[in-house]
Image (cartoon, rainbow, N blue to C red):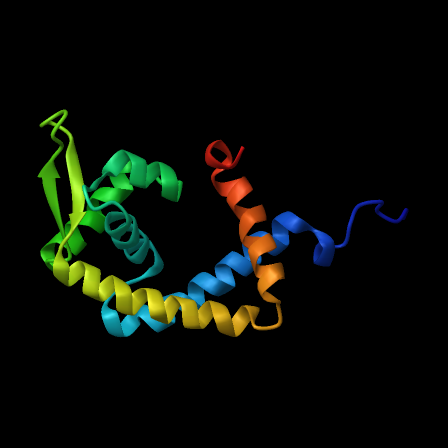
Length: 148
């Protein structure tokens, strides 16, 4: 049987990015358990905290790479806990914005610190410059329209 001319799995960037994402997400999920969050709900909360005026569900879905219907349940759970509120968008009252509450902002700060600690544990072997390069490279993949 002829040898494959492709890269080994250990050199396959798609595999490495996917697998490292799964590993980090799993570790962050464990760190967020005491807060009653998982990576997806933490991400929705983070996006709401980043936009003081609120963020619409469609843009959250697009950022997360999910169907808008998947965001509804996440927002419902966060809203039931008093971490976010749905408000009407000023430009279009039919469009609902997700706005973080003060309690949501406090929980986000704690969750963010926990997530950062997990990341630091996995990435401690990288220099600050290497981390900046990695972050920038990943931003080009995830947010191509804002990095060109």
